[in-house]
Image (cartoon, rainbow, N blue to C red):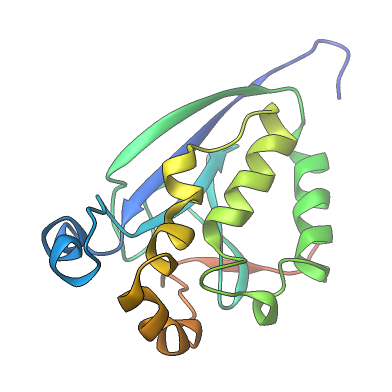
Length: 169
């Protein structure tokens, strides 16, 4: 960190992958209301960072095929500079957030953004997002669908993959 204590804005971009269908169909299919199927990303240093089936990726904010986010949450500011952050992401990309570690219910984009948000700001992402997998799996239909859903790897097209072998400075 530099001696001037520069801070950088950190945002959470929230996308509904169902485009409103979860809100309409979840009461019928799951017996409970879900407001969306959430994909999240962290926006900091003018880039959007997310995790999917190919690992950690980045793009211009709103630059994936998902388009602009459905909502944006201001997570606060960080004193972590870009070089330290990119080293941190590189380390995550070599270990816990490699593409082959992606699991739709247990280790997904929301797990990633929650961990990164805490690293940058000390704040977690909203619980309605992190609680979604257990909400779905707590229903009989969710249990029936689990084997099919476990095989899905979500990776919104339009991002550049960040892996442990790239050093972004």
